[in-house]
Image (tube, rainbow, N blue to C red):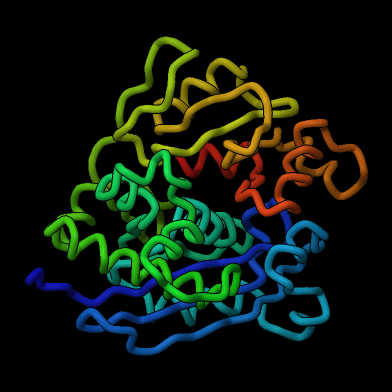
Amino acid sequence: MVDVTDFIALDVETANADLASICSIGLVHFKAGQVFKALTILVDPEDHFDPTNIAIHGIKPTDVAGKPTMADVFPVISAVLERAAIVHHSAFDRTALARAAGKYGSGGLQCYWLDSCQIARIVWGQFRDSGGYSLSNLARIFSIDFHHHDAAEDARASGLLLLRAIADSGISLQQMVDEYGYESTVNTTPKRIRPPISRPNKVALPGNLTGPLAGETIVFTGSLQVSRALAAADAAAAGCNVMDSVTKKTTILVLGDQDLQLTRGQEKSSKHRKAEDLIARGVAIRIVGESDFMLMIR
């Protein structure tokens, strides 16, 4: 039997498309292959709440009124997470915490990150055409009961999926961290432990199957700081399949940073509006800004 060491599963929810707008953090400590304890922290993001996000997680401004900000939370979780293996489902959680650290001028988290979504794509290739690798679909496949978009519940499900992947693959947690993990320190944002895959020269390419975001399907909208061709090349190198239009297969919509600011009003692109409509109908699409996305694929 594989020797499973301890880890902490983590999930965050955000108030809007800016990943720095964390409004909830879920932490679940796994010890000797079992859930040891869980904690949910409500956070005042000091930012507006987008109705789309409220519809997803149910957290409203009144729920976080008087709660600590991330400036207060970082010192607490830094002590808990120091040198620990942090398991999360998709790159959004580690990127959100890095963005929040930058927003508040806090030091980064000194820990190792492991994406259970990426591990799932590697261990269970057969699910690529059977609903994909969203947390809800994998939980359904493996009969994991949880309340989706509750941060602690999502974290627990991510941890249970990792335990199942370890059991099915025979690959230890340490091996997974060494091969696919990210490391962050008090002075650095999360960066891949192994060297990143080189950028392809061509633009119109499917995602690199070994990239950290392999299996994601991405669409760009709005005015970007780099050319659309360069952004597409970076996304493909990181594993994303780049598409021109938003469909039910889309998993990430990247907004130009200037357009992200416009989301506070009604000036949203047709792609943005379509993505929100699909989200309202249950399609798992994450909307992020260009800067957040570039941080995710470093």
